[in-house]
Amino acid sequence: MDDSPLPTPLYFFRHRRLLRAVLLDDQAWFVLDDLRRLMGHPCSERLASRLDDDQVCVRWLRQEDGELIERVLVSESGAYAALFLFNASDLCSLRRWISNEVVPELRSNAYEFGPRHKHLRWQRQALHVLDWQGQFWVSLAELPRVLGDSPAHAGRAGWREWARRLR
Image (cartoon, rainbow, N blue to C red):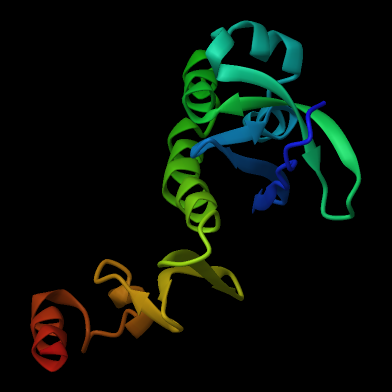
């Protein structure tokens, strides 16, 4: 083992299942056992054997408690290939979750300065925002959920009214 600092994985949860991910050389990598459990696949070795050599690696990771663990990691392209090869039951939603939530948050946490993707969670809802200079920014696509689904804000007229107010 070399003297380079060991990455500490970020923890993501989907349906109460853990997915640990790290950013290595600006590329997203996932712990194979966690991805396998999310997919409902029974065997990590079989899953790893079907992927290309550049999509799988073995690395030491530092856990939050400081303990070192050796884990098999799968690259982002390897994760998508595994979803395709083994036809995970919720393929589309799992792929969307990885590409729209996990990877952007992983990348934004890698840099000390600059905007960061955040997920505000309360009750059974989540809101995707951008944390920039101490302020949260909400995308227009998320705005209807923030405002609620009341008839006054729904439809094209509601959007025009809010666009007018934002100007």
